[in-house]
Length: 160
Image (cartoon, rainbow, N blue to C red; front, side, top):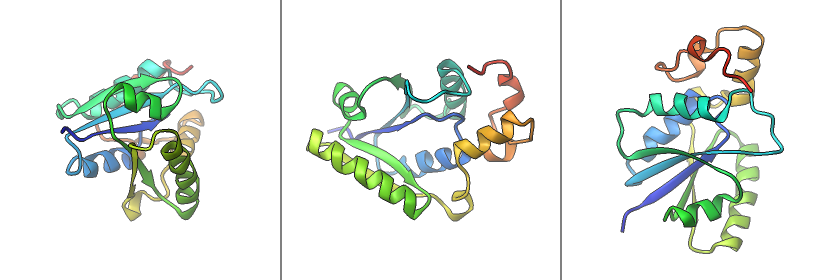
């Protein structure tokens, strides 16, 4: 049976921390679906299409990675796509507490979907999309925090 994981998130923008988690997870799974969640409660900086384009560019060389988007419950998306695993990265103890609660609820909703957590490498522990987005919004150079193939200047004007 093919081991499929869903890596859900807003990815606004996709960072080197996200990239690191996905690259390290490739040894664990046959396929990883990076699923950009459309969260009606969150105001995105980049459009959904822009975020998907950025991520596609990062993994254009890797056929085992698919880029998609979804609305609704992550577990429902997993069922629809035959995924038995939800992949999440952990930077801090606070991340663990937050993700643990979500994983336990997901497990209660759909028992045969497992959450798999990977710790970020120490040098990525301080990087999060909110901080990177604030740097971009303020006109700073955030290039060291996003994958090298993403030229943020190329995406100027694609904000929501």
